[in-house]
Length: 235
Image (cartoon, rainbow, N blue to C red; front, side, top):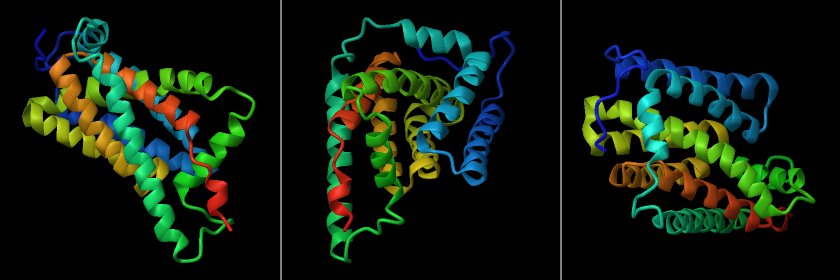
């Protein structure tokens, strides 16, 4: 199956740049608005992004998204666990590096720790008593499928029309990183940029969303299972 220029579900020619502007602006404005108005948790913001992205992607590009989801006979599927391990290693190294740099300055402020660390602390409290693998599977299925459908199945394929395959992979990764900058700050944005680029390239090679979905689910399981104890870093 070749990745062709997308069209709307009604068969009419699509306007990729126009539809991307609408969907991205709607997603980002909603996320920023919720954060400013209600100080919503990153999990809520991410879920809201998924709730907006999936219907928009399916409404405008249903046939291609479904084709990318059902194509599972690909040799790239075994790559998914290794991709998730690489992304987890990057996140772990980033956290440790940020920790060392901050500890040299006297440690984190307990009243105002970095956003990504606040998220990790909130995860521990939210999933207390729930096995981390089960929490990772439940969160991974929601965010893994939802974000891949929107960012790779819709955004990247729309960008392929004006930018080509390589340009679309890079641009969609940058947009994915910016989205996580809004949700979780600069450290999470670097992770999202790396993961978005790898997921985009794997999706292009596999002509399937399933390897990226599997990697996303595996990463969230690792993030909830092996999350660092950032309490020890707060004096």
